[in-house]
Amino acid sequence: MRRLPRGGLNSMDALALSAPRRISVPIDNRWGAGDMAVLDFGDPKRPVDLIFVHANGFNALTYRSLLQPLSGALRIWAPDLRGHGRTRLPALPDGRRSWKDHRDDLICLLEAIDGPPVALAGHSIGGTSGLMAAAERPDRVSRLLLLDPVVWRREMVWAMNLPLAGLLSQRFPIVANTLRRRALFDSREQAMSAYRGRGAFKGWPDMMLADYLADGLVETDRGLELACAPAWEASNYAAQAHDPWRALASYPGAVRILKAETGALCAVAPSSRRPNVEVETVAGGGHLFPMTHVELTRDALLDLAV
Image (cartoon, rainbow, N blue to C red):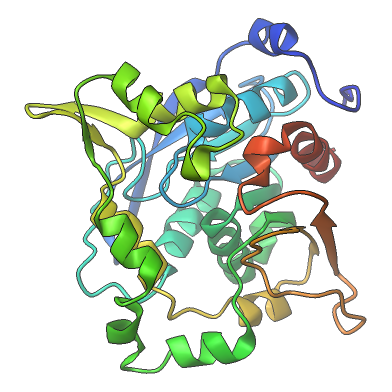
């Protein structure tokens, strides 16, 4: 397989590569049936090399400028998770306790792929959900790259699996703040102006922000609304009754974890007890370092998949 140069490609090189195709993959499990939207990068005649799963509140197209330069060497499937982007699966926040719905959707996606096992990478919730899916179907996942996956300390995970934890999690500040998030805009230009350089979007390239908004806003009778409704995004923050530690212990393949230096949501530390797990810290990186440290992240993806 042809390797790309370290440090990635410049923007003109990236744009010269073919744009991803849009495909739909039928999903049918206990959480409800529908179509998962997937961006298909690279040569459609070759097997899928890599699955890439986005973070909470975003969508696959957000990461286009990260992934498209790899399409000359790799075939990549990047899905929109349930409740995000263009995926049309039931997304009902009431009563949700865990990310097992995302896990099971990714299992269905893995089972829909012909060919050998694939590498899987994911950011934040995408990394955690991908890890849990890989633990259930290690025969379909050759190795993992987890970009600041959400893995709380063991005692926190234990507490969040208690019966009453679901009520307490609704009081998390991030849940309340997300529920108050503006969800309606008059235009994409208005949304771009509202987000550029602010909050979680600080340091983002304009191209990446525009890609996020392209699939992150949907036209309605009221105007442009967030494709990932604040109630669904908030439910992902509140629904923590799953166990990524168990998944990490049971998955037998190689796992590389890149943690943020500031504001990390991953409590996994290097340990000789887990020889298949490699943990590194991204210097100067926050939780959204795939958006601000694009070349470093792209090199890690290339190392994973070739």
